[in-house]
Structures are given as C-alpha cells and as structure tokens.
Image (cartoon, rainbow, N blue to C red; front, side):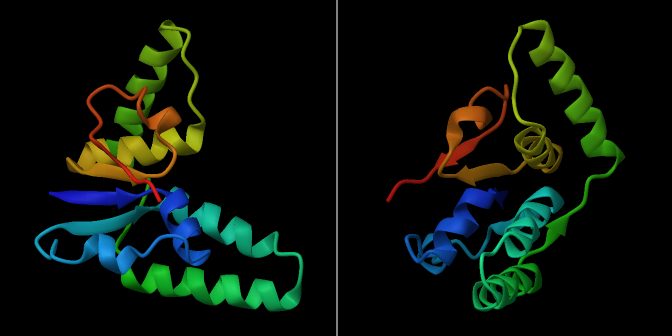
Length: 135
C-alpha cells in the first residue's frame, strides 16, 4: 500500500512543525508519493514568497521534495475517478476544492491513502482512506 502526502504535510514539514522522516520511519514497505497537484501548489508557494531569500529557500525545499518522492500525474484513470466523484458530490450538493478532489482521486486510483492535516475535504470522498495527522 502507499500514501499520498497532501500539500499540508509538506508545508508543515517546511515550517518544521512536522517531521516527515519520523512519519515514514519503520514504514519502508509503503510507498510515499505526491500528486502533481501538490507539486503545483508547492511551486505556487515559491512564486508567492515575499522575499528573494524566502523564494530561494522554498524553491530548494520543493525541488528536494520532487527529487525524493514519486510524482503521480493527472492521467485518464485519475480523470475518470475525479469526474465520477465530482458528479456524485454535486448531486448531493457537496462541494470540494478541485485540488483536494484531484489529490483524493489520485490516491483512490492507486489504492493509496491520503495523509493530511486538513481532512475537511478529504473526509467527503467516499472510499478514501485518510491518515489524519496532528501536532
């Protein structure tokens, strides 16, 4: 089995409030990966940095994460799951941010869970296994 790390996990690790190494320790049999949307959100944070120094630090952090974790792209199998979930949720009057829905769809397509500090949207995705993280 594997785990898709939500953007919130990497942001808290960058802020040094969460230690990914400790989370992964003794779980060598599991795959830890990122959705391409998480990469996009992290890169967005690089471009929003309020100083050149912060931009360089964030950029180095994001590039290291890209190097360390497998990246799962938004492909047709994920798009099919995403579209079905989106339609089902819309019928129920439930809205989820597109990025979180893509991250969840990525995990479902792979049979992975999602590790997150923000379960608000993910808990609405039927069948998605969630590892809720706390400080």
